[in-house]
Length: 426
Ligand SMILES: Cc1ncc(COP(=O)(O)O)c(C=O)c1O
Picture 1 (cartoon, rainbow, N blue to C red):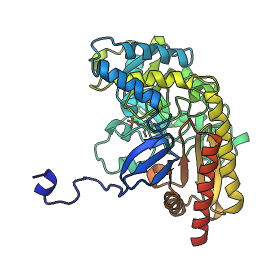
Picture 2: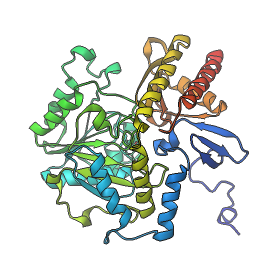
Picture 3: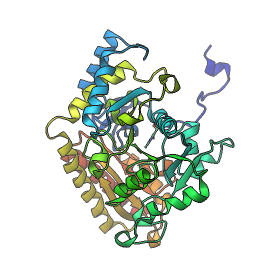
Picture 4: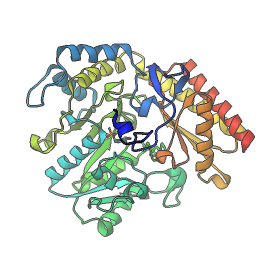
């Protein structure tokens, strides 16, 4: 007798699950058990960056599985060894060391914090309002959303959240061209009044993903890095969403022209959704003993083999250029919807990391209409997400980086049809 019927329950899940059961995938498309096709506009959870079941990457992982599935990190292995070198080669020149013992983004961020704390001998971590840095208890404690902290009475101390560079909705009520970058300058006051005074690092997503596709203005990261260096604080970029070509450059650090002292990686790293995370650091930041940060599935060999092939594909001539080109096309197509539909606000993005604000009167965030649009899109066979884990007002659109002009035209068309449906019911 199954555990399900033993328990006398029809639904064995702890949490609610969708009635749609996915059974296959190819490129930008997913297929359910009835054979219905879905256009995946968010690449899984922004991690299947080369499209579902990319044949070359699947083959690389299968080859590794045939050869050796697992070796503990007490030993060197071919794919992890090669991956460390490849990561150092493609990242900004100051990042010369790869730490590959994390199975995902939350754990990579925790490792980066440990490194910063170990090196500086300090403790606090500064993050931005609207940050989403993972779901472990430590990362939840550092979240930029109170909703993520509220249910847990014993969150970790030492996190200080500061206003983000969200120019369209500036915390300080300033205009972007004359603001004096208060979102950097005022951090001193948060350190003085909200922290213990002992700050190890600033941990930021270069583009706030879950927070609403928020793109900092030119000059922000130059100022933030200078601020950190003047105070002996380590600057960490969480590139879990932005890395590996998402922004039309290998990393968002390349797009912004500012390299952090530490970079964390996950999500798109294996190209096809196999779990893997990583931390890249400067030479001077080595020294955290191996025993302090390592997980059973950190540097899992098939994931490392997949990551190597993914990096090779991203480096092919024209690949990132295509991301930039179709990204602009996507942005322009979504932007045009604003002329027809009053609830469509700002479209913003870099490469194929795109967000579309859904607004009510006075440009106010409109979550119910965003939810209605998401539902209408699903009726059109298109899968999207909404910022703040469904509580925000920004449609998240991050299709696979292999998207063609036709794919992007199809996405925009489905958005238009869904907007029509929402408008008719509005
Ligand atoms: C920016 C960012 N960092 C970290 C994470 C956590 O990654 P993981 O789920 O692999 O722990 C996420 C996941 O959504 C993310 O978006």
